[in-house]
Length: 413
Image (tube, rainbow, N blue to C red; front, side):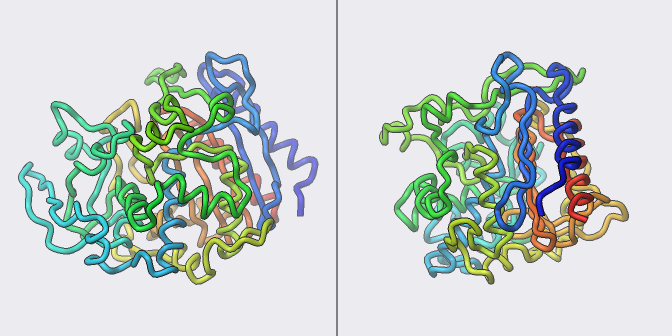
C-alpha cells in the first residue's frame, strides 16, 4: 500500500530539516524506500550536490556508494556458485584461482609473521573471517604499512593484495578487503573485469543504467560532491576519495584496464537504481518488475542466514579511528538494547531492531561516506540513505536513518 499524504509530507519534512544548514548539518542527501513490488514508497532529495555547488541534490544525483558495492559482488559470487564455477567451502579451489593466497602470512601482534595454518575459502571472504582487514579500521595493520602506507582507494590492486592477514583464517572476524579478493575471483573465473560482469549479469537484466565503476560523462555531470566533517562539527569540501575512476576515459579500454575494479567499494550509483537490487533480495532473487531471476531462492536464503554464530559479539570488538579523516571511532557497529547476539550473512550484517520496527531477520550495511541501506524481507520493505560525508559514523546521517526507518515502519503498521 502507498503511504498516505500525511506520511509522505512528514518524511519529506524530516529529510529537508536534515539539510537546513549545509555548514553544520548534511549538505545534501537522498532517501529512497521501496516495497516488495519494487514500487517506491518514498523518494526524496534535499540540500545541494555539494557545499560549494549551486546545484540542488536531486534523485538523479550520482553517489559513490563505497561498501554498498559489497552486496553486488556477493550476488556475482553466488551466481557463480550456483553454476559450479566458484565453490563456497573449497579452499583448494579458491587458492588455485587466487594463487597469491597460498603464500599469505599472518601478521602477529609483535610485528612478526607466521604461516597460515589453513586454506582460505570463498565463504570466509564473504563473511570477513578470512583474516584480511582495512588499514583505516585497524591500527596494527596501518602501522605495519608505515612509513609508506597503503591506500585502499588508490585504484591500484597492489594496495589490496599486498596486505597480510591479521589472524589465522576462520579464527576471527575483521572487516576489510576480503570482498575485494572475492571480486578478483569473479574476474579470473569469468574472464571479465568485475564491472563488466556486474553490468552484464546483474544490471542489464534489471534495466539498470546509472550504476558503474567507471561513470560516463553524463553520470559524472551529476556526481555528488565529497565532504568532511571536522572535529568542530563543521562541514568542509574535500577531494573525492575514489578519484581515479572519475578521471580516466571510461570508453578507453586500455585506461580502465589499469584501474582496480574494487568489489569492496568501487561502485557509483543513483540510489533509485541501487534499490532495484534490494527489490530482488526482497523477492527471493527475482526482480518484481522485469521477472529476471538473478539468484535461486535457496541462494538468497543462504545469504541471509547467520554465517558466524561462533562470533556472537563480533560487532562489539569496536573500530578505532585508525585514520581519523576516514572513520570515527565506533564502539559497536549497531548498538541494540540488551546486547543480543548479532550475525553476519554473505556480505551484510544481520541486526535486530532497536525500536525502529524492523523485523528480526532484517539485514543492512553501509558505505564509508555515510550511506546506509536496509532490507527487511519479512515486512517487505527496503531503503537507502545516501550522503557523501567523511569520516564514517556521522551522527547526523545515522540519526536521519533511524528517524526515517522508524517513520516508515510506523506507516506500514
